[in-house]
Length: 339
Image 1 (cartoon, one colour):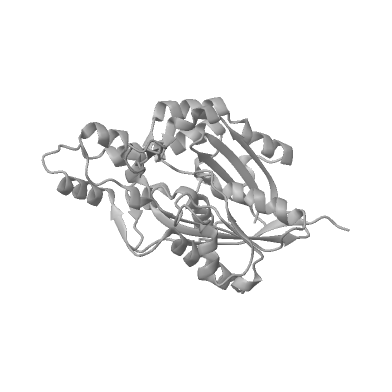
Image 2: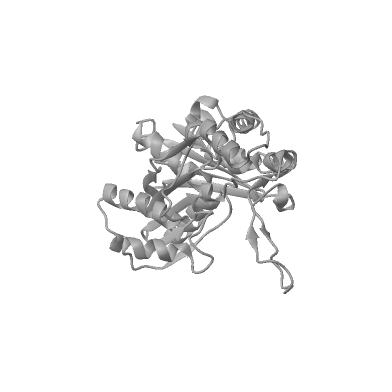
């Protein structure tokens, strides 16, 4: 019996039509915080973000994932009943329980097993890793990996002072989006390899915390806090995790960065992206840049980049693609795909 491989059969993205520029965001902060002198240009200067997408007020993360999934199914000539597994890989869930994958499946009209995979901005890559294992072992055939992000819902609009603004400035770089990937068996390799690493001691370098989560009856009700980033500690965690995780799979496959039609890299800030490329040797011209015009798309970043590269004709069937993930935790990983 011949070996079963996994191929990436399709990708689709959904970006809400409503957008907010960084200048408009600064105007809103000024309106909500009269008398507080907040410096202009900090958000764009630190992140490179000029614009982010804003989901309609009535839409949940599952809705954004479903928009992308429906487009993917339509493009693939399939229906929800053709799926035999759905993996939701978004950071923002619809609710704590049950798994948001159930909500996605119900909205799609699917009747298959589901579960969530969650590992900050690396969630989609980890979901591909899981789907690849399940397909090559014969447990599943058509796996939908999807995500929906409504990160802008966690932007704080009233601040106690400039110190708080600087502490949570990263929260103003996020954007809303949905994305979906379809994986299925193939006689030849599509997913060529993947590798992951983690430096978990650096988990607190970038956090979205739940305060007052305690059994103390005198404590206040738990509250989700905005994203905070310790840039120095995060950079140190990246260095301690090392860059071999990105180079070793390429060496094993006999590839270099120049062999790829596109390299999709998670992007939390434009300056950090170019510094990362310098450290890893990724040619800047290979990178699909989304951070400036679309913001930090969280888990949707890599599939949105791939969808845009395919739509633009930059990536065609048979081309090599690298999906490079960086996540708070600190986690890093790479998936090498022949499209």
